[in-house]
Length: 102
Image (cartoon, rainbow, N blue to C red; front, side, top):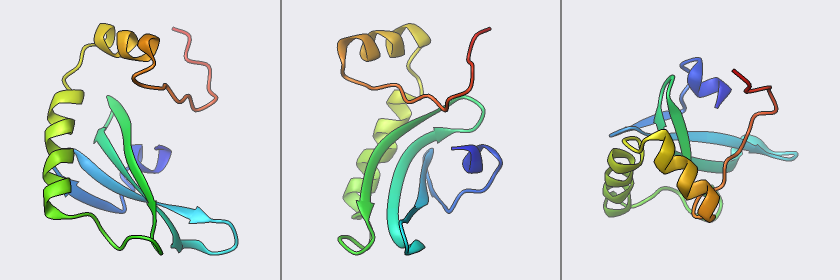
């Protein structure tokens, strides 16, 4: 997400959905994995889906439409709603290892 926050997005799929490449050990990014992320710069990133490039070339137009709908909803959630989803186990928060204390 550091790359995306810096403006280095592998593919902007529209509707606050981005695709980022992730390297596979020994193969680099081109032969690695693709991640689809609901992303609003400076606000939040929600991992939606990941796949190996060797297993799937791309996602369908229908799946992309669903992801855009999901982005519209999820990026509108309040912090309280996010906290509740994390507490219930519906979402898992992934931290970057930096101290997030205010």
